Length: 418
Image (cartoon, rainbow, N blue to C red; front, side, top):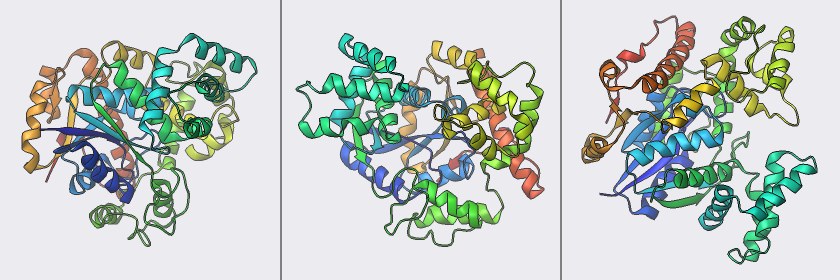
């Protein structure tokens, strides 16, 4: 039995995701696909369009065999933490391979870059120090140092060297490199595959003329129209039907759904500041506190605070860390203890039952029912899980406010079985 792992958000599930699952199985010759999926909040620092159970359902209908939740502390973290949290789960699940999308589609080039960034040879470090001394940002300095270091490397072709300067400017390439670094960190022997991104750019805002749209464009249309009109060619039919079902129930959530909660949290902490929260420096803390009188909404506040040095996405993540109470000390504690502390099943296919035997070999607890966790989890694992439960109840509370229905208690939600 061979398994391939995919790390995803499926926000929402579209044709590109279906293509990736099919190609991952083809390239790896795997029998089963294990998906590590973000829960109700995603790496952009926003709520997912649909809740994790609906997105899990789409994934299972479209080719996934087992869906595991990525704890929220990693799901809305930096690329490094996102990758290490997810890869730690695939490591515990003994996945035979990992497959991810990238803009460049060149696994050899990405592996070479990952090796350099992991080992940091002296010549690379010298080039990085020199680039930083010129006053450029760290991402730019790192790209320049890599290009300088690899310009005389006989492992690369002239074509690979030519595209090198753009590799670290593309989000899926960056995330892919972090996956490869994480594989080295956990000393795994997984086979690695990358699939060149098809169709629209990751953040393309408009639907294209072809069938491979960005998730951004799909979300934009749904947020703008509260409908799925025009999406039939961009999503598998079953995924589209699930999206239509959730919209009919008024279960859609956006950044600005968090506006009131965030304003309360920011004001309640204004005097003490926000530096204990993940990714927030003293300068950024002062900036957040100093502009509160201009606060209108979550989205507009990110626009107000962003600058050349701090992107909208980074600000969104920082504000979400404050709202969900995710602190620097939390991530340090999880890192000291191996990152993911448990394997929480969101859903699986009945016909893939043999795959569940893999779960019995894991060194960390497997959670299928929250009620059973008190006996099996360490204090560190409980802390991580309670953050997930809190995040889920925040998300469900937003839906309850819209629908006038009671909050769906996370302890009573059932895993998805197809």
